[in-house]
Amino acid sequence: MQADKQDILNRLAQAVINMDITRANEAAAEVIRCKIDPYEAIMDGLAKGMDKVNELFENEEYFVPEILLCADAMYAGIEVLRPYLPKEDAWNKKKAVIGVVKGDTHDIGKNLVKIMLDNAGFEIHDLGRNVPYAKFIDTAGELKADLVCLSTLMTTTMDGMQVIIEDLKKAGIASRVMVGGGPISPGFAKDIGADGYAKNAAVAIKVAKSLFQDVHLPLTFKTPEFVSVRKNHGGVR
Image 1 (cartoon, helix red, strand yellow):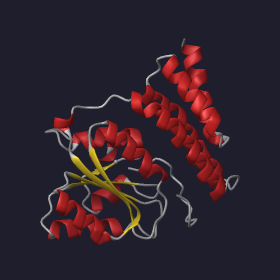
Image 2: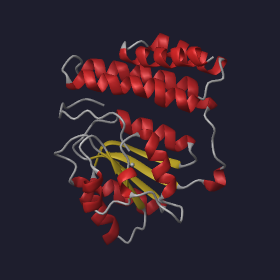
Image 3: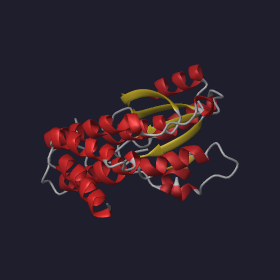
C-alpha cells in the first residue's frame, strides 16, 4: 500500500508539472479509491508538484503560460479531492478575509490557502488579487472579520502590508493579521506588526488556528502563500 500511495502522490505532482488536467483528475480519483488522506494528497502531491513548477520558473525553463497551465492542473485535482476533505463544525468558524495586495496579480498560492482554510472551518471572504488597501479595511470592518490574510510575491508591493495593518489599527478593527508570500520573512512580518507569518499553505492552517488559541505559535513558524515565484513577472496568477 505504501508503495502504491507514494506512486499516486508522485503521479499527482507529475500531472501538475506536465500541465495535464486529465491525469491530475485520474490520480485524484485514485486517491479516493485507495482511501489516501486527501489533505496529504494535496500537500504532498499537487502542491509539491507546483513547488517544482516554481523552481522551473525561477530557472527560466517555464514561463507565465506554463505556470498558468500547471495551476489549472493543480486546481482540477483539488476539486476532485475537496469534497472528501474533513470540515469542522460551523459553530467554530472564524471569519477570514484573504487577498493579494494592490499591485500584485500572483494568486496561485493565495487560492490554495483559501481552499485549505475553508476546509479547516474558516468562513472565507476572498477579495481576489490586486486588492486596494482600503478594500481590506472596509471588508474587515463590515464583516467584523476575525482574520485578515495578506499575500504578495513581489518585493515592490510588500510594504503595502504594513499600510493595511496600520490602517486596520487606526480604524479600530481588531482582526488578527496573517501575512505570507515569496519575499516575506518572519522578521519582516514582525517588523510590520503582523500577528502571524506562514511560509506555505500547510503551515497557514496551523498558524491561523493558533491565533485564536491561548497559546500562539512562535512568529517564526507562522502564515499565506505557497508558490514562491520571486520574479516580478506581471500577469502570473
